[in-house]
Image (cartoon, rainbow, N blue to C red):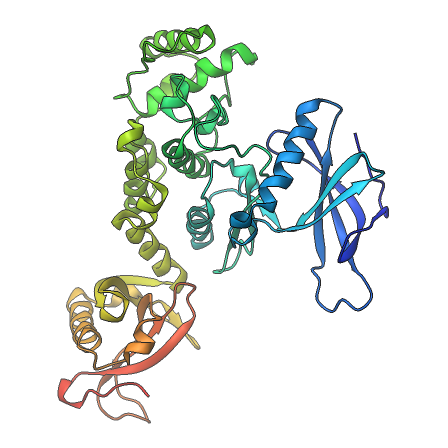
Length: 439
């Protein structure tokens, strides 16, 4: 076990690391982690302020094995070049016997953030889904900027990342896919289930896994976790294939089936997924996305790319964009410069020096605004193709009015990219014959 006192300095290749204090390890808890200040070497002009230092926590072989595996995963070109993974700064050999990893610092983990019905929480979910490309635990989703519209989510803790289908029971109990409970290997479809489960656990902490098991003994954790899946998805028939003969799989399944027939200990309070989401007042766009991901049969479950390209995910992102703008979606428009992608048209809730009462705008006025803006945008009369290609949403910032610079009645509209940054603004004329492109 390696333990570093505060102010201990580790020597790296590009900069050194001064230990500040230990951190509480999440996940598998087989490592010691510390926050460190980065001390650039002479002549280095660009360096981060903080780093995370990670080393083995005990003398058990699997702890060192996990850290060695994590290093090899970080050295993989596909991982090293991907923006969604936490960056490896240094691999340091202390006294020729202890491996220490210096890693990118991020503010917190998804497991430490409490879900609320606000734009920040929904922005976190979008950032997470974009980052979650591997089998993950929510303690391994690392976040920065959680109280802004530009949340950064990255993947960390790669010590338990294995090749596809190479391990049984590789997933934590709360994230374990139905087929893995039944004794089949963890594969790519199992990862999609895990990503959905992470999202669900963020929305409803403790709804999956061994949490709140009435008999807090390791032997009962599997039974309780399987039964929870059965309550959320009553159509699931947990029946292992005949090829599975391992009693460590068969016995928990059989006991979970009995528990499902006579639920007790609080299990009876868990409702089917849609009812749980309705009680929690989760927006239908997110419920539809979760149901799309939670397909019980792995060969019918969508792939990660299927989810990212799905209409369900696009609808949820549009819902979140409207929240980030602080407005209400009134229509969708076709962006011909983005391969005819459908993007949301939103009336903003506020602007410089004012707050709009959206409920005071009648349906007729909204429909008229939608029709005018849609016609001008889709007809290519509002923006050039180069600008349109950068736009993920349109925002009406001012309803029909006249201004000092334009005496013609018009709507003020601008296009934004996915992060909410303005691309270009223009005017949509009430009188279409006066319409011109934004300069």
